[in-house]
Length: 128
Image (tube, rainbow, N blue to C red; front, side):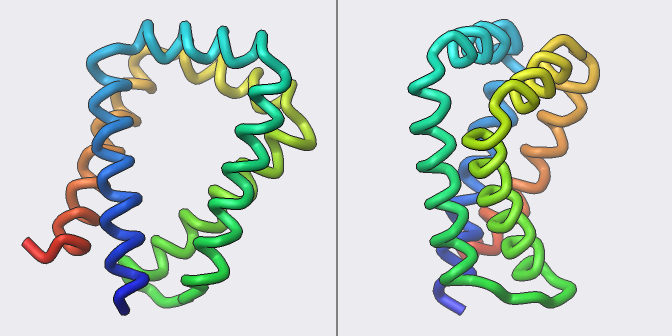
């Protein structure tokens, strides 16, 4: 239970932070994506760290149930998969990132969804 709450705090806070950033500074996200693509070593190292972070979350919290705890598990597996994909197929991942950063309306909608989900998880995790 404590691991679930900790991960709800972590993921919730991260979603709120990224959602607000995506909404308020979409050009920054696009510029960062372009810079990230130019640095292959950074992409590899980031992919490895994201994979390890996802692996640790899955190892500590592999709870499959139809609740917020199950959502945490899905996010952990998605994180691990995302890290692996950045290591194995970085060009594909960057093409997806460019596609997303060029869709301004989709980016706005996704940012609002991230903030809403993030606030919900933070609410649960911090016990407000």
